[in-house]
Length: 332
Image (tube, rainbow, N blue to C red; front, top):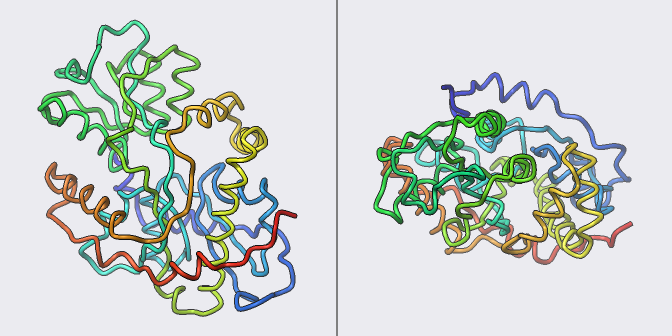
């Protein structure tokens, strides 16, 4: 099966070509005035959040491109097609150790309870130890694969002790629905949909197994360009404020997400109620770098990457104070 990592650079550039302006910008104000910031997003992602929070009217132009995976965002940054994007800890691991234009500039800490190992409602599986010899679905080169490896290791097992089945989230939901999987390691709304529609049971969550860190990556060249750098800082500060707004207005947030994605509002209500932590944008720090290094080491051990890599060169703390001190206008 072709993994996300096998998708071609042409796919990346096709996604980048879909860039569309988020509406007329206000007159240029401050250092970011006149800049155009190219931002990667996911369906129901930061663009929708900023709009719902009333923080989408910026003093610079923003162009969004929607992607289906963080690995494609890393490729788009290296293709100079994107200035800013977010992803889990894992996609940058695959560009570490080689020349790259990607720089990790902020950490987004959040929920890990939406990362789950599901089993059918009538399954006799009672613990992770019972996964031995079973068909277990997961998404390759994502937090789902790392979660699965960590879960198995707790029982003294490896991927060789199960029948691992790499599937996209959508194909995984289909396979799980058809009874083709004994267990499914998945994240986000797909897992909630399986629980709501199929009565799937949660065997484990990512709590205690995943860091909850998502990373904001910028194009190194954009950081050296004063207007784009100022826009990056402003955009991240707006996102930080928008997440605080969502925490205070969960029902409005859930309705906005449902409208943007077509997923029932109850799914987002459930995610909010079950979250392990609120979402916050934090500065680059040694703990975040160490967490990603652990992930990279694990992927090297299982052969997902050819050899051990040092992730530290990917990181920069140069925006820490600027993001913390950014002055964002209140909600319109």
